[in-house]
Amino acid sequence: MPTNFLTKEGFDKLQEELDHLRTTKRQEVAERLHEAMEGGELIENAEYEAAKNEQAFVEGRIQELELLLATAQIIEDNGRGKKHDVIQVGAKVTIKEGNYDPETFVIVGAAEANPREGKISNESPIGKAILGHKVGDVVKVETPGGTYNVKIMKVA
Image (cartoon, rainbow, N blue to C red; front, side, top):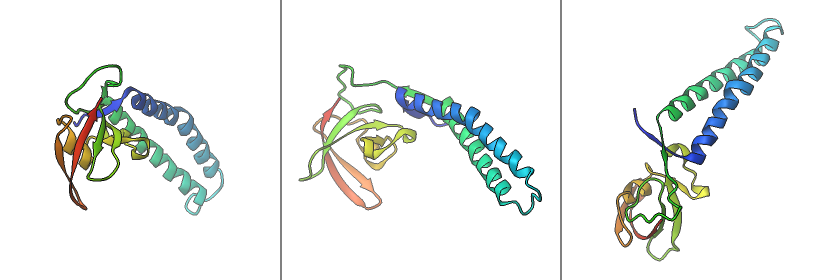
């Protein structure tokens, strides 16, 4: 079973979603199903069909979250005065590609990745390429759109 890297914040957020789905959302869907079943012919009842589809989605998401949280490895917050030379999951990294402005992001597990928030996955092309490297290294990043080099400017 693969390990899912999560920050403590990400773990807590997914745990809250799971708790909400198990309690509130399951109950809402059950009530919708009950109301739809009272609505007459189940074969032609669009509301019943929609509620069954939502129930399947909710149960699927619950299973997905349970597995994700069961295999989660919490990554430590590297921003607490610790100096890290080598890039690892949880590191805050600044890179520079050619003449472009430097970019800073945190490497997180795939479940938590959100580039808009400056969080990239350790499984993404950049994440994979820079893991294990140090400040000053020039690293080749291979993407479906082509290959390019980035220089590691800072690791925290």
